[in-house]
Length: 106
Ligand SMILES: [Zn+2]
Image 1 (tube, rainbow, N blue to C red):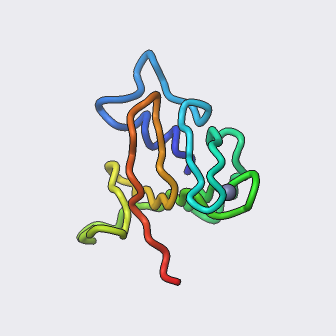
Image 2 (cartoon, rainbow, N blue to C red):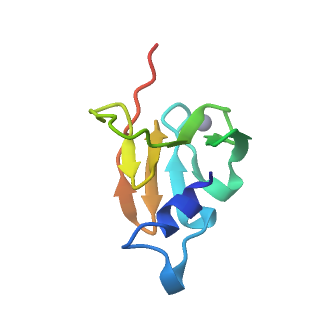
């Protein structure tokens, strides 16, 4: 699942001004690069969508299905309807910031 498709399913987004991955900018926490998701490496593994930094290959965002009944705490993801963003990079969607929501275990 691509991030653009998740955001366009949300009531406040989509419609006539549909979002594309080019509208979503990730700031890599590891190397500091800023990339639109459309410029990132994208892998689809079953239902998960995985975006990686075009410079350092660090995982920036994983889009995973929300599992009903799961309680999301700080550092375990940001729910958007039926999906969860696990972003270790700050995301900027047309200037609106989605803070880091995922702290991978080291
Ligand atoms: Zn990077």
